[in-house]
Image 1 (cartoon, rainbow, N blue to C red):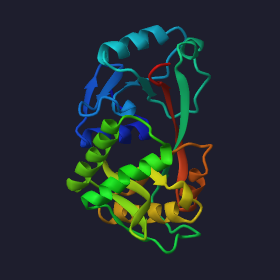
Image 2 (cartoon, rainbow, N blue to C red; image 1 turned 90 degrees about the vertical axis):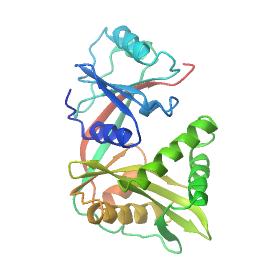
Image 3 (cartoon, rainbow, N blue to C red; image 1 turned 30 degrees about the horizontal axis):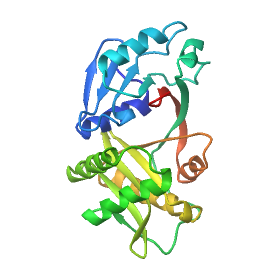
Image 4 (cartoon, helix red, strand yellow; image 1 turned 60 degrees about the vertical axis):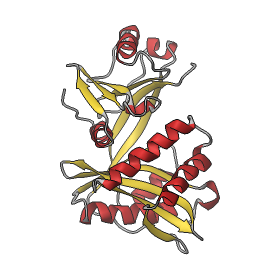
Length: 261
């Protein structure tokens, strides 16, 4: 199954770089991250087309067969169009529709209000990566088990060691207060990952400065002609990306059901 969605094409490429596996079932793909079974979007089914009404039971059965131990459910949809109304049986099954915006950029530019007073550099040492995990907790709370978080950090760090990507941080007084990753997704594409800013340091231009610096790395070091980032259209961060030269390209559609729901 070929993937037309730029968001999911780069998602899948990065999961493979992290050591994930992809199985083609004809009308859907199965993406696995054996090293981290708690990672929802490392263990998901990518549908080849939007699901029709009355198919929730079939898709749930497929997911259960592929991931019998999973407590979550995650479906991506390989489409680039604006999402239609979710089928009623998906909603009844607790599968919440998600819509994100995929943005692209071929010439990154500095933000209009760059951050000052911060050291911008790649994460390198074990102490840097410990701070990376701590920053994620400050941004999103104690989300997931410690094992899940440690495995995500290990996957990111291993990816940077291969030379296929880098994680950049903004440090104030030696403390990591903002970070993001940019990775080679193949085909002249570089994909941003996990843009995070400490709540105490937001609206200071740090995220935009990181986006710009990482974009230069993507163009100059990774050799990418096109930079790709995915954002929630309702969040303020999308305005930061647009200010750095990104433009809306397509929609990314998915369904998820957290554990216990």
